[in-house]
Image 1 (spheres, rainbow, N blue to C red):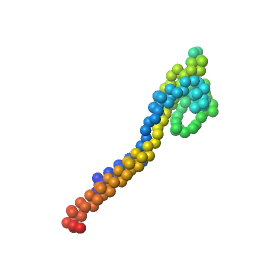
Image 2: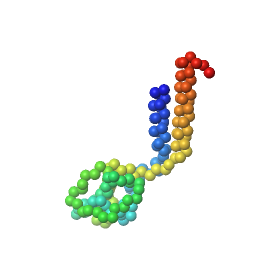
Image 3: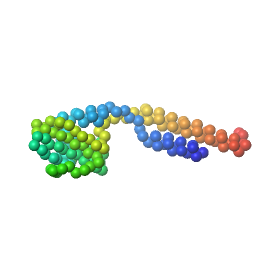
Image 4: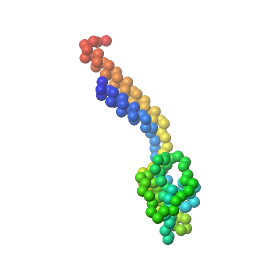
Length: 149
């Protein structure tokens, strides 16, 4: 019976996660931002800006916020050194406004497509398995007591 409860708990946790398919990887998504204007259009003003002689670095902090929700910064701070963040994206931009590279840590920008059919199949399979395990467990209990139905 204890194993049955563990199995049911595991299947319940699995059903909380919906199935999805990656449409565009994080690299593919972030490589689409090629100019300063495209970055501003998507992300707004950076959290922090570091300006050099030939390049600018823009850092967007994602501490305490979800990258998949619209949250556009309205102002930025010019700094001599970036603050330390666990979740951020940083773009390096040349003086002509072209993105030279990007660095992303702790944030996932991959675009996914939900697969509701797979989620339903996962949940249905889990329910069926639980029903079978419950039936087996109930029959074992009856056989162990010596009572036959």
